[in-house]
Length: 115
Length: 111
Image (cartoon, rainbow over all chains, first blue to last red; front, side):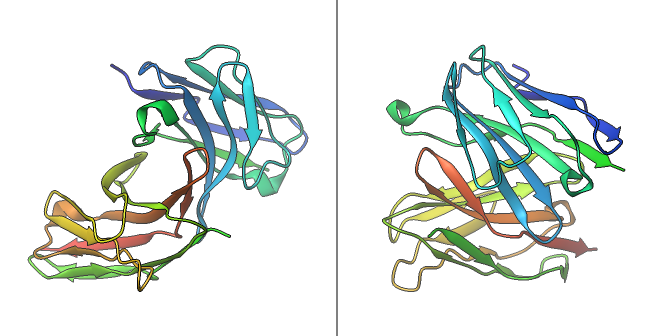
């Protein structure tokens, strides 16, 4: 099992450019999450999904969009990147309420720099 | 609302020293509490958890007790090793398995 994988590992964008971060999990988890990690602020939830075809806003959703077309994939999009979106992005997945949620498994992260 | 307040770092200890990282929380209802660890260049890994008051989570020599009366979940280890050097995050779970994280505490253990 690969667990949770993220693509790419690193990316540098110019202000206004767009990009998509891909997260994939092979554990058949219902729930998936996108977090950003900033110095001195811990991890903050951007968006999450409780199942294929469903998404919901987290704590800091502005400037991001997400899609969950397949159960194993969760995409995070930046339509017009801003320097404030420079961060490390982590994807995570977990079972849902029917299995007591259990722990969230995290990917290795994507380091994004917006110039 | 939900929030986690975590001891500021960084923390530097000598090998075999005793470790305490303080964590207090504010939550509606009865949250589950977690400690996650992040080793350099990696994602977060669950270290231990507790789902109700007075539960003690433990793993790899680390322990934390869910104290409802003091809304705390302090992480302790009796004798740290160089390999314990990492960033430690306290977190609580609310809603649809959403985690609220503290700011993280960087621990460096020197030989």
